[in-house]
Image (cartoon, rainbow, N blue to C red):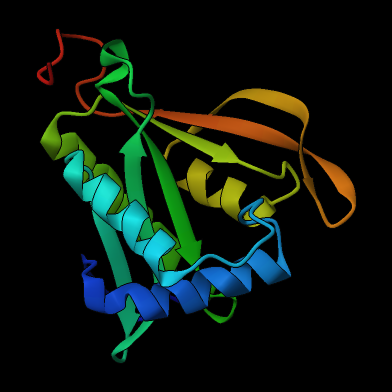
Length: 178
């Protein structure tokens, strides 16, 4: 069942809640391969980096509580990759399956398309992370590849899968971002 979720731009005031949520994901699972808890400064640095590069950073609120956040980042600093971004979506464990991730990723895709990005890449750090895989497939991503044993967490090697979504209008016309 989908919750009534408000998606909005993340602000500096949201950093403590984003940190709390992300810290749970670090400790409990492989939604990130980070093994050390970040600081508020590190979470804010990611938010600012995304925004400084014209990429969106959103939070999802339910009843005034932040239950998820998502942001896009440049795929690479090399100029030729300027039209491609990576996505990062984090949802509170208790809100998974309630449509929060889908709403965040859908908003991220729409905003990136409106900016002029053409490709969105998702690195899913654990190929057994079926929640992240289903989310991306539901939003139109396709499997682009697999990297064997590139991650290490909880005492085991993890395979990373790469998913990709072409954003409108894709490669049918020259890029608008130069």
